[in-house]
Length: 192
Image (tube, rainbow, N blue to C red; front, side, top):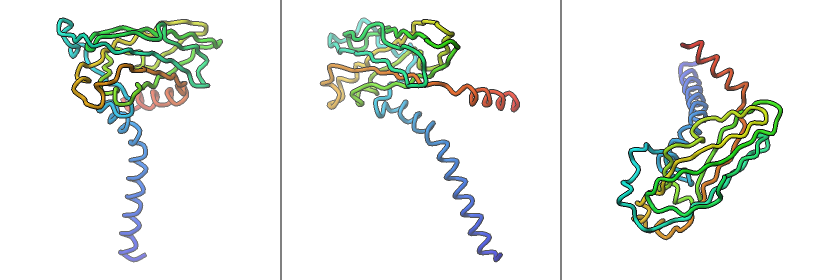
């Protein structure tokens, strides 16, 4: 094999390896982008210290609707305890979802979330949420799952978003592949 062919083969292999690496990084990078910008209705995750001073709240209210779903692989009933509330912009609120595991074994799920309309995502601020972590329910167990949030008054400064009078917060639970998680934990403990 000539030197030119060897360089071409090595270059091609490097490009292929880079493409494989980027395909694995694409999902976490896209999720990080969405969480940072609110793109595609992804809500923002914030610290409690960012909640506006409750004495300076605007009088403007917005209706927040709640929706809950499960994918076919999750044997749970999952729904909001209240389907809608009116909140003042900047007001810190607490909502609860209820989940019941109808299977005969413990199951673990992870929740994906979004808001509609999409543009409201960057103004819907979550302080605490069950969706930040995987949730495990024992056989027959029922639990309440809280979410603490507020709608950022900065929504009034956005010409496209200021007219929004209703936001829907939606969650869908998906099963966690226990075998992959166990292998990942084993791999991580072997490195440590």
